[in-house]
Image (cartoon, rainbow, N blue to C red; front, side, top):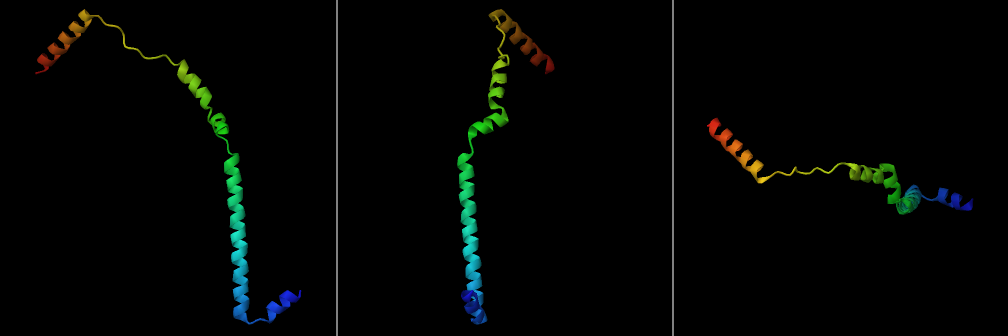
Length: 94
């Protein structure tokens, strides 16, 4: 208690300096504590949980289950017929 009485007896400027120093020290300590807790949360954060939440394995399974798109096989004769049809359509449009 004597400590506070000594502070009360000091001039106003010195009391303000002591007050602001205390506020700054407390603010810095709270900020550092917050940074530490944030760091711990980030370290404990696992990507596996994200995969489970986003259901990524299920999405991969669904993608595997989709039918693959393949071009139908065409013979040389069919290709020639298609080329002729394209040429005819181009000449008739002119």
